Length: 53
Image: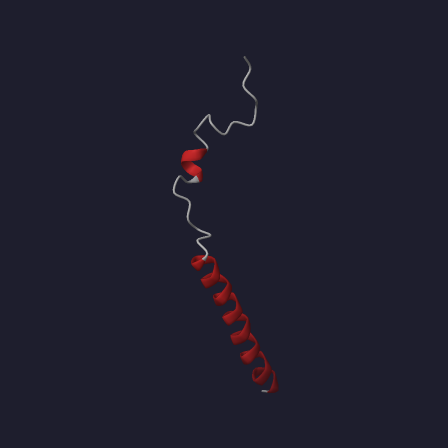
């Protein structure tokens, strides 16, 4: 029973920290990617190899 007295507040604290980090990432627009990786991978503009003239 003593373990519950420690583990419940600790888990709530860790969950709150995780939620705060997620909310911070939303507020700082970390997930905004208008072009997207799915479209970017098909483009030749971001090729790793230099163009040969």
